[in-house]
Amino acid sequence: SWPGAGGGSPGPSPELAPCVNLSLSNLAALHQRQGDKDAALDCLHEAEALCQAVPLADAAATHLSLCALLSQLGRHAEAQVHAEQAVSFGEADIMQLPPLRQRAGDTVGAAAAAVSLRDKASALAVAYNNLAVQREFLGQTSECLTLYEKAVILAEGHMDAD
Image (tube, rainbow, N blue to C red):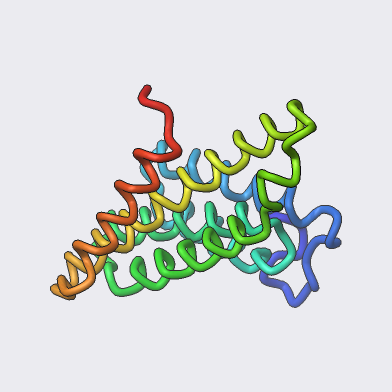
């Protein structure tokens, strides 16, 4: 965790927030691999506190990680909230992309934009899938099929086969 975390400190500077968020997420993954899910959850909650100061894709990834860990812990209601946040951040992230047609004459820019769209659509597909899974665990099956369909459509349309 970053110095002063939880001690009333305002946190890292806005310039450092994305780096700290990523570092906390990586530290959470390490704790999880070592079997310390409580420490992993603490790191992810610290990372979550930075979500308003990081790019939307990073905020979505943080919430996806929280969703996955909470689901493993059987805390599906909490996991659902984070899946919903991941969907919200993921959708907002895609909506910020400039239209691909604006880059028609710029082949390098168009290729980079297509890769960016693919990455963002892939992350959103995972978020839709995770939200459906959590709703299924909670017996809220009415929207599951629609969410799974959205995930499949995004995956088929934007993810690599491998």
